Image (tube, rainbow, N blue to C red):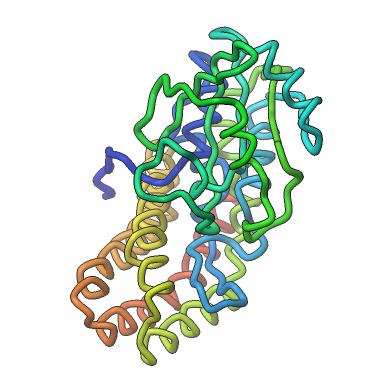
Length: 300
């Protein structure tokens, strides 16, 4: 059975969404699972492997969560004036979820200062007209920033998916009561479609071939500093939650995937790319197993 992980990871959008929900939210682990991020794999056109469904991005994941949990919110974006007016209504009880922003341009993250193509989400809990107060899930509670600095980072042309600049969600509210167990049950057919076993297996094989040829610095840091960590964590979260609600066989496959992905970290850092490639090839057939168990759970 899965051993639940707890610690700092890269789930900024699910952490931010849970903060926006407040006490009524089911917790960031359940939120992350309901995004659908743990089901499938794809290769980006630049060769980066992503342990997420093809075509998936955090914006689609957030939409999944809101629908499955029965919540809604207002969206603002594209205009500085419009987003500043929306921020003026923010306080401790009326939080706003900002993002994606370009992480490399967030001035409170030491050592960056330039775009790195990394998306990030955070929660705004205060605004006095000049400075915003944010809860940044990357270990920065109650950080105070000049609003212009946030706006500078809030442009999305450096990111890998298309979202309007200054994308902001406010006015979070529940529109129907949904039991968490029911939300997880409704996720199952969605997740089964997301797995796309043939495409995911092909992506794993393609990633193994990339590893066979060695990694550029760019690809090394993408995998070793980000994607292996987040890929293993998301599957661990999904295994834990699905086991909790009785979907044991699905959880077993997700736990197997989490263990395989997590086991690549040391070989990558040690430069043993052949071992990482071999593990990636072991991952490939598990996507068909995962789809099979998800379909069975839907029928049960």
